[in-house]
Length: 164
Image 1 (cartoon, one colour):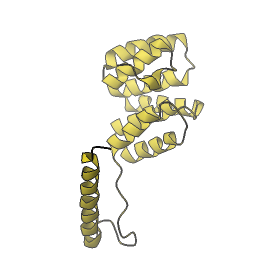
Image 2 (cartoon, rainbow, N blue to C red; image 1 turned 135 degrees about the vertical axis):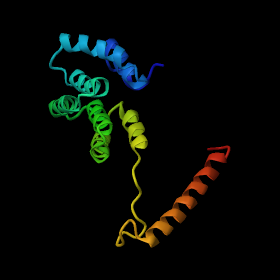
Image 3 (cartoon, rainbow, N blue to C red; image 1 turned 60 degrees about the vertical axis):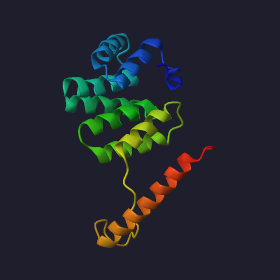
């Protein structure tokens, strides 16, 4: 499973990123530990170490801190936004995760597809139909359900069309 968007990374780091994406955290931890010893100042390695620290060892404070430090060191790298968003999501901070993904999507990067996938996984609520009423107002709920059904029916019709 070779992804084209990871082609610009060194082979060992590419393997580590793929292990993280596949959920093989122990193998990824070993690879990024070696990379951290070789290059302690790399923001990308620091970010993955933070994410793995959080996911593997359940150390949220240190994991988030490492991811934030890495992003501060290189705010133009989309993978750092991706890792911080994953860390926020793992900690239950969905709003912060969505904001971080949105910031990452502003960056032109070959890793954009990973951010788009995470954005879809996090899910974003649509705006209320009548913005001057509260979201939980009965009129907004009914109109929201109707527009959702209409857009879902239209989307399923488009998917069945043979030329699309």
